[in-house]
Amino acid sequence: MWLCNSSIGRKVIMSVTGIALILFLTFHCCMNVVALISGEAYNMICELLGANWYAVAATLGLAALAVIHIVYAFLLTMQNRRARGTERYAVTDKPAKVEWASQNMLVLGIIILLGLVLHLFNFWYNMMFAEIFHIADPLGNPADGFGYIKQTFSNPVYVVLYIIWIAAIWFHLSHGFWSAMHTLGWNGKTWFCRWKMIGLVYTTLLMLGFLVVVLAFAFGCAPSLCCGQCC
Image 1 (spheres, one colour):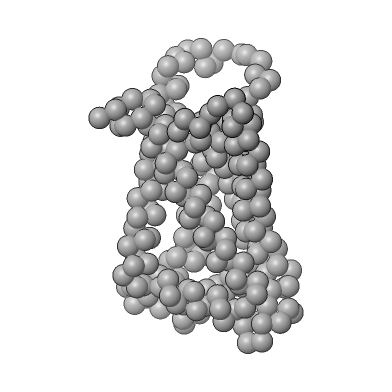
Image 2 (cartoon, rainbow, N blue to C red; image 1 turned 120 degrees about the vertical axis):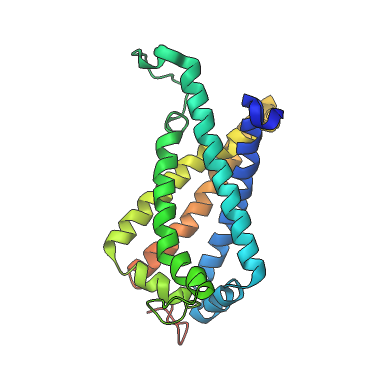
């Protein structure tokens, strides 16, 4: 099947799964922003998205998308390395028109993957996983997502790690967004520049949303769970 065996097919799969993951990040960001408004409202969302069958099914689907995206990223990277052969060891000048993110997508991907493992441990493991398998979680309530956000970002080490993670995702998406559109054929001379600008603005606003949540909880400016007022 050309989608799996050809270079173009693999890039199409990378693009489709990447766009799907960006849509999930958009939903996740909107959900996180709710925590800046009301702790009770955020926990209501967490309870709705707990160990319910539809949430579990969506999580499995999301995991499948992420695994496919990661696997095909490594396949394409290895394919490109084999195609270059010994030339990849030659000392060459950095191409003027090649973005830094484009040249370091593998490194960025590894940082993002490590950050994802940390994020799953801090939240998913203590929430949905704990509820499914009846594991005692640290806060005593697997639906207390607001409490886990406060607990996580009260630790300066986690704050720094999450900022690095968010920065890596921004670099990855700033290139990946327009690259996906290019692969899918929306690469006319006019729209190529437009997609680059749209991707830059969209991914910047998206990552700023995540960053604001991290910094708000880190500096104690998040709402209280009981009154919804800023501390």
